Image (cartoon, rainbow, N blue to C red; front, side, top):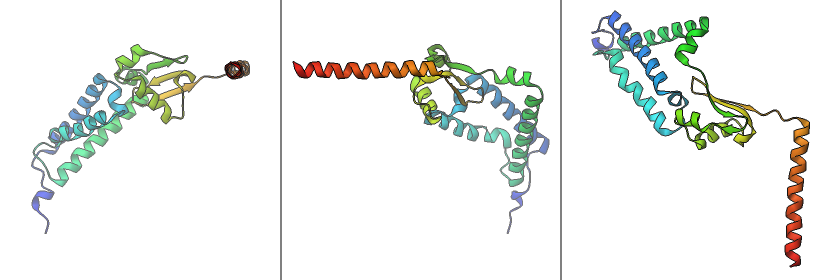
Length: 189
């Protein structure tokens, strides 16, 4: 037997919709203020914040309503709001730049921008881990590395010309030759 409370909605539908929209917009502002790192989910602490954030705002969205219908209305209001916001940002790219901000340049010409890392509250180790996940072994091999407004990392490898490759190969061979010469000299003594 189904309970009457399963489908009864003790909070007016318009209030439930307004609550969901206000929470959605507030979270956009808060995540923008607290930076891209929260979106990147780089470590367990950030993940815990994001998971508990959803539980924290749950009551603000549904109010004193724990009915199935109330939950569906709140979820639908969130999804419709997200649909509208995404479409507005697509249609008006300037809105995306205003609210989303721009990418943070973390690596340029193989050099880590420590000031940008500090601003984004990232360590060089976290940056290296993100690069490793994308198949990049060394940060110095990158032309550019950015933290995008949506929290993802984008990396651009350096374009090495044939002449550069030849110089690198020659330098590596000279290093190996020097090592062999040093070993020979040590063995003679």
